[in-house]
Image 1 (tube, helix red, strand yellow):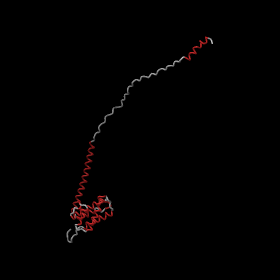
Image 2 (cartoon, one colour):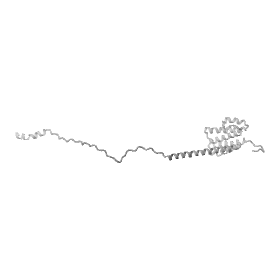
Image 3 (tube, one colour):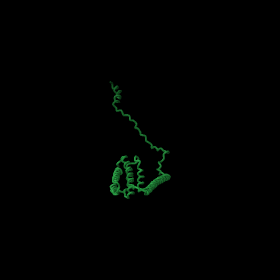
Image 4 (cartoon, helix red, strand yellow):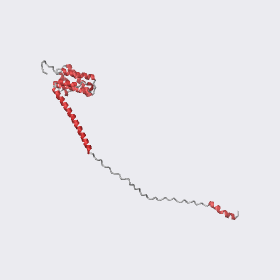
Length: 210
């Protein structure tokens, strides 16, 4: 190879070994964000403060009228019951003890529709009031143990007094201990109540006015 050839190809031998300068990419420029003006919204308004609820005077009148009406009804019921009780007592006062007792016992005839506890409360009270009116013994305020000894001293048939004692001893557990009586026993005790009143009613002498 001649010197001329070497000189001719020398630039091509040097070019591969020369560092190739990397092409610089242009730096990205972040655009400057311009402040945006807030959108002006014309269809939104501030929340109104809560307004106090107004009181309707008519409602007060309705309540007042209802209270007055209920009070009047209760008053009428109370007066009616009081009057009925007063009439009943006045009628009973005008009757003989046995008449008042028998009328009261007649109210217990519908045994099937009377609660057992109520039945014996009423039956016991009827007989105790009869004893009070007939013999002037405060029987309604006495216990059975206090009453029976007093009955023994009145000259009443002992079997009758014993049956009365058994009736009261049957009534006490029903009235105070919740014992439920059978209907047949209630019927027999009611029948005895009528028998006791009739057999202790003074017999009229011939020619004596009632």
